[in-house]
Amino acid sequence: MCLIPPDLIVALRANDSNRHAAMAAGAPTPDPVPLVKLFNPCGAATWLASELDGDGDTLFGLADLGFGYPELGCFSLREIGAVRLPFGLRILRDPDFSTRFPLSIWADAARRSGGIVGAQRLLDFVGSAAARRDPELPPSP
Image 1 (cartoon, rainbow, N blue to C red):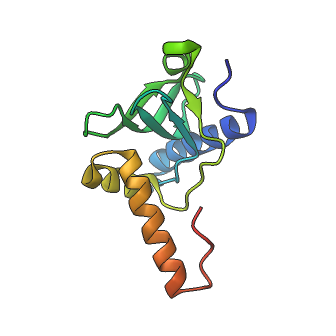
Image 2 (cartoon, rainbow, N blue to C red; image 1 turned 180 degrees about the vertical axis):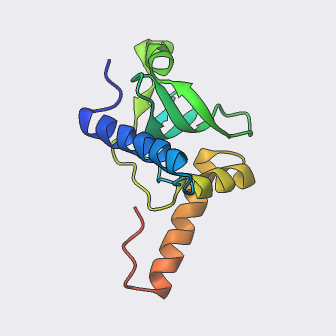
């Protein structure tokens, strides 16, 4: 099962390449926005990914297994794709997910709210409040 379509694979790989290039040049490490949201339709586990390593398996992003302690780190796309849930369900990708907030903001909001779902509510509220104050801002996704 292909959880991530080719166009997002390319974008995730580009973020990884940009980070490696910045590190090699001694420049500040980029803070990209998460591009992919994966979730357990039967539970609380949620992952936001911003990068994909050259091995095609190792994602970097924010992982929230539903215990109230979301963490930045690496996780395996193959392992997530191999999860079998009750009733024949699997881990899903949210095709409507998009954000303008970088991963560091998501991580901070998730830690403060206890998870990615809470962070999404918080950031949606912040984004819509900012848009009301400044109509020139793009609408909150």
